[in-house]
Image (cartoon, rainbow over all chains, first blue to last red; front, top):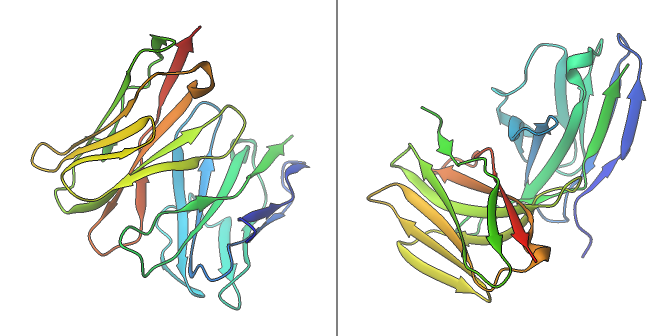
Length: 115
Length: 111
């Protein structure tokens, strides 16, 4: 079936504006993860969902960041009052939860540029 | 101490050689271990996972896990220029679904 999809693929926004990033996981995957990757850096965990609930929000860098998931499927990551340091690639991944290893599959990412 | 440590590289190997990528982790309760390949400008792609001590082979790739030493490695045999990428080690701890990634090792295969 289809893989993880994310939209938009690229987003350029002005400092101070709000942005919404969308993730559509693989059908049937109940776990969903958001990561951020800055240029030349590793993956920074932001938040993960099991179904519609988020047991771990510890990675959200500030209260400007929020995420929700509805219907156990699509998730939206919202960044309010964007800052230049928010510029990065935002990656979404999904996984099954009844396998031995919970391997994650990534979407193509959204490249966010804050000017 | 970082939870998952990798040498950022670059690791340069000649075409046809064996590339050895290493990763150490701090949580003894870790249960699942993953290797992802990330080409420049692309998202990570899962290439191997392992959860039992020993070796797991898939084509030219072999993952090795030593839980006593908290060490996991990836061997790439007959390295090809197309293997040039950043290889991310990732570790899942306990019953928790959060996966922690290392910074990645950049591999360069020289023709």
